[in-house]
Image (cartoon, rainbow, N blue to C red; front, side, top):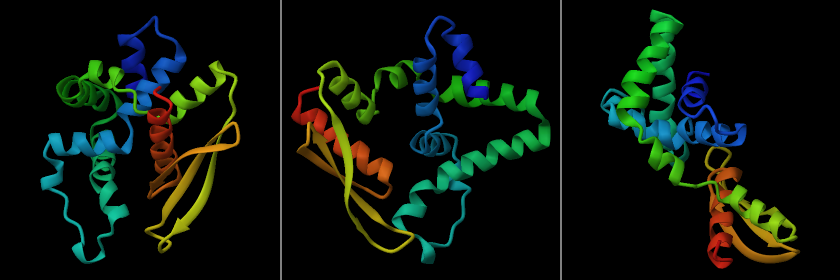
Length: 173
């Protein structure tokens, strides 16, 4: 909510789609992981290295960032938390111009291209490997029922993004 309000005040004439996309980039797990490292939270996090898996370790700093923000909110209240987030996190550590120019939602980019060009695009899961807590997914992109790329990821969403990124490269989008 704080990030949405912040963006609305910064970009009052931008449409809802733009604001939603930028907000999702800011609060994504990858962004929260990077932000946690920038403020030194990674040096304070202690975890069980014996139970470390590629998937759970990937999210630990972002989870810690969310917990930290939650603790600030519970301890100091909403008004203080909003000011803290804006001054000490958003303004101090995020480059909004870079976030805006870095379009990493390849799936949306591919779907929009397909709609503009009268094509149909589908994402199909073709493989799932690994244990319950460390599954890897393989997704294929079909353009007008023709396979043009495939991607891997530790979540279906990441596999779709990987497949869409490769499809964008193939199609020079």
